[in-house]
Length: 128
Image 1 (cartoon, rainbow, N blue to C red):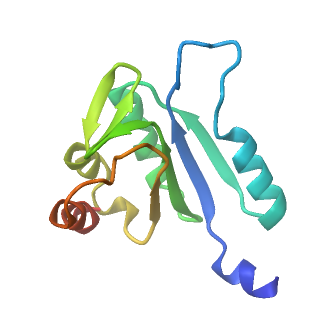
Image 2 (image 1 turned 45 degrees about the vertical axis):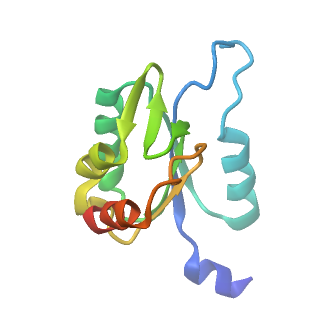
């Protein structure tokens, strides 16, 4: 277990509303809590339902030097994530993130977002 701490990265999660059932919301919070208990990692959990919220939350997170995993939990289609009623293409997301997230692991917890050609994915990686 000692080696784990050396590689441990804290997790920042952005998530949108998944469906209209607001009273029984499913979300990533239990997964983040379990991960934190099991590994000692810290986490930030922010909801994100509009493009301005996405932009704002990314600005907040980029300043967190002790974090290294960005978990994007949204609905998705090839090459884009879906906020509540709006779509964001990977290119727009890369523009919002820029090089502020260099060295971070970006995990898309969204259906099909990374089902794109290798060149487009490489461009996202290069821009971020």
